[in-house]
Length: 159
Length: 288
Image (tube, one colour):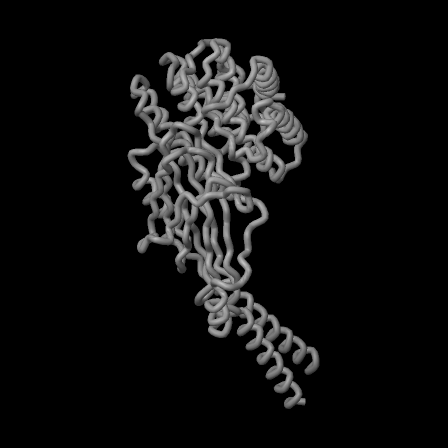
């Protein structure tokens, strides 16, 4: 009887410890993404351009720096405005925009946010409209591990 | 006996403490390491770039600006809506009717606009997207049916709502089906007007073909492997083949190097493209 009680007690403690571990793990990565608010602010900054598309890119700061690339279709002769809302990120993530995809020959940098001090809201209006490749430059985690999101909204000029 | 029990508990708690510590893997020790390797460690680049698709409204606007003229009777009749019984056929026709609505907004008659807004709302509701085109938006649309700017605003609002709905419900993968329906219909409407040999419309048609790669990726990643999806993949691959066989593109290595303002394709090539577009569109609007 005593042995059964003892086993039950030990299993109970094991369960408690494992559950605590999982709970700690689940709560450890804080998610700072507030995509609805970020989307609204971005849409406000888009005016007077007409909403075309949007994308929420989820970003987790890991042990290594990362690059995430998103292809955006733009059509010749049109005028576009890109809005990036990066408020939902614990660390600075820079944006670079290229004319070709990662690894392509003669790839040219069209825009970088690296020279901007405030990058909560980044605005870019391309001079020439053609398919573009947005790169998010994500550094490795510099503190407590966090995740968040970048919100991109693209609009076109409607005359 | 009691000592053994206490020892066991101590060991378990120690393991728990280790587990606790390792779960907090981004603690100080790791953080310092991470800070140190920001610029020197290998940068992880995703294998396949993500992509976004344009709105059907923008595609219609681009064709309109290129000189596309409204031709009554070529859009998908609203009566066809009763033919669409599967989730895929409803989603495709939601796209088709959205493109028809945009086409009518830019150049159609009042009654066409009113008919198509109703059918788009009906399909959005049937697909569970109740907020995408709610009654107040439809009422505003009907009230301002003569004001193109207002109608464009309403359609942009419904696009925003749809993007938000798909994101919130983690079903973004469905967008490719809506988009494909709209894209095929937009291309069909555009190709019907090229008989007048408008070079701007033709270059717009060719430019649109660059979206096919991403449509194909979206279809292949679609979680459900219904036969309808397989048939769409086959059709899109056939369209892609037509595009890559255009003489003007054969010598170009990278599609991003194409200058679409200057591109010229032959009448035969245009005929092959519009024939295939019409064939795919006929299947879609038949609900097959």
